[in-house]
Image (cartoon, rainbow, N blue to C red; front, side, top):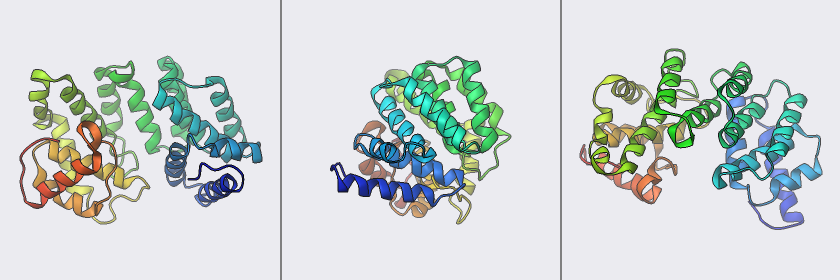
Length: 291
């Protein structure tokens, strides 16, 4: 996206507006585009330019809020929490069936550390509008994580509750494996004995069962239909390599066709380099090493 003023920025606004408008009420695709575009342009002034041009547009209000959230998550604080919250509520009033204002508010709750009851109320608003909204589940998972003031027990409780309810191919189906990868990376980051034994996380128990099910299903043609399917397949490929199952990751890499995401590969080096290293290992049929 352009960082220019004037006509260049106006063109960016037109493009972003059109890309979001064409998603209609496909909340999954709309949420994916909204998050990707807002994060990519968070410092480019596109959101402010759009809101200035269309101050009553629910899309412009929401996009401005999401761009502010993206900066807040990056910087560790919101520039103006009240403004973000207010615009989310205004967007929700103008488009009551849209879950995305509530998804952004879940993100705000991570930074502002809302109490659990308040977060649960926001969560209900989001999931009542789209029960399996991927971004809502990931925002809640992050809020509950020990890295953000929650706890491993809270994450486990959340995963245990939602595991049996989520359809195997739902947009949020990767929430359990995502939690496991974050736990694994947390162990690696601690160093010492915990890092040395981190691979045991994948051996036996519910995490191993979840990985086995994902490996059997996710890479099948047409199994996943949601917009961020490639991101979830990256999580699966990483988890299989972390578990010493690089050979089993081969069909996942084949499905991805070189489409690497930054996370989780960037935990210990350049994401694309780590992705390609493990892809090569899977092609050689080796199951040795950890990411």
